[in-house]
Image (cartoon, rainbow, N blue to C red; front, top):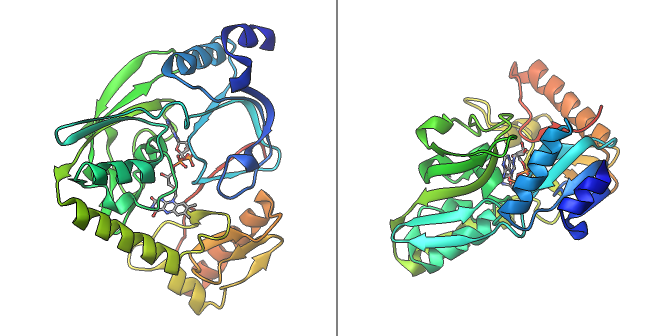
Length: 299
Ligand SMILES: Cc1cc2nc3c(=O)[nH]c(=O)nc-3n(C[C@H](O)[C@H](O)[C@H](O)COP(=O)(O)OP(=O)(O)OC[C@H]3O[C@@H](n4cnc5c(N)ncnc54)[C@H](O)[C@@H]3O)c2cc1C
């Protein structure tokens, strides 16, 4: 069966038993049976149709910055949308970009064009596609404020354009999550601004991140969604959980809202730590924490 795939796609974009720990910011995760790294839309369409035709489940991801992949890895296929799908076109106050571009890079490009609206995205280590799906946000900005429309590909290889309204955005939520749609591009609506001011604000936000977040350690960002009326970091600090460790997984001693991989952490270490934290928080604050990163892979 794989020989057909080798005939229709270049060998260098097909990886078998590729470890997800090499494709996630947590640096955790076992092998994917077949990973495709498309370098253009045609290759992406070909791959998607092949998986569909052969009834092989397909997982789509970007820069793996919001993922915890289990040790057994992912059965079936995975398509990584990053390098190769990074075209960007600026026109007036709009930017049309392919989903594989890094969000931070796009924010820098917008600043270079004196366009405001993406300052908040500085330092979010995901792809545009992942950000559109997750409604990524920070410092009072989120993707929902700038996305005009999104181009998606379904598993049959059909392209559709969805408007901002159709995406039904909420806090770190959109209808794109678990929809089977693959985001191939997005059109963002920005506003004109002063290049120096935009860059200054971005530099300040980057500095804030650097001083507060454990950027020097592998993680998947904030481990928990923000519960209404509470801040996770201070709650965990109050419970004395800063630095608390299970195997190689640790509640960051720089920012308790992050779980970091201090070396050799397994997905089970992280999940055990998450479970422990949730129990303690429920007992002490009567709050049900929800995990922010997505847990994928064979159990
Ligand atoms: C240090 C650090 C700081 C962070 N700070 C923030 C922050 O401030 N704000 C914030 O919101 N997040 C933050 N994150 C989390 C993460 O960067 C965002 O959620 C980001 O948008 C995920 O993008 P990604 O490309 O890495 O997606 P992935 O992790 O690869 O995937 C995330 C989800 O999106 C889906 N997906 C990805 N690409 C596509 C596509 N093209 N089509 C369809 N589905 C797709 C995947 O299936 C998966 O369900 C942080 C993470 C880290 C490690």
